[in-house]
Image 1 (tube, rainbow, N blue to C red):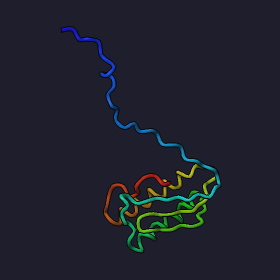
Image 2 (cartoon, helix red, strand yellow):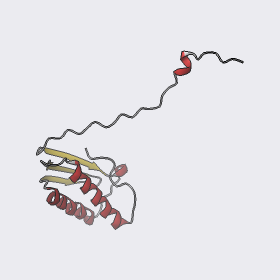
Image 3 (cartoon, helix red, strand yellow):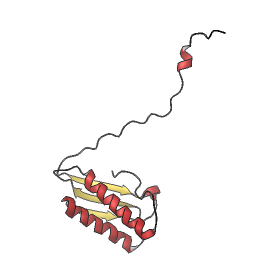
Image 4 (spheres, helix red, strand yellow):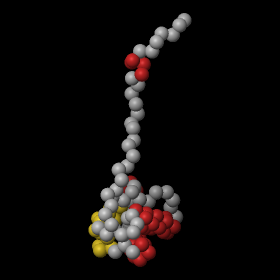
Length: 123
């Protein structure tokens, strides 16, 4: 049997969800920035005083290492608010990536856990 030419309806297959790339972050050197980072699954990950001390220690180290002035911070039980000044020479992502990575490593080491600690990129 000879196969007939395909019809238009043969090509109209519903597509799955198409993911668009992330939009670039707006960045202004030396601007004041409000940053929020939330724990994975909105868990209440910071319960003990030692957890908050780990965050403050890493925040102080980030500020010194990357020359990022931190004006204010609020440490909640499942997220962190930071008010800081963006660096003039590098993007803000490098110091915040360091802070989020190192603080999660330290907290995982204390608890004996593995896996994601922060929910997603900071916003």
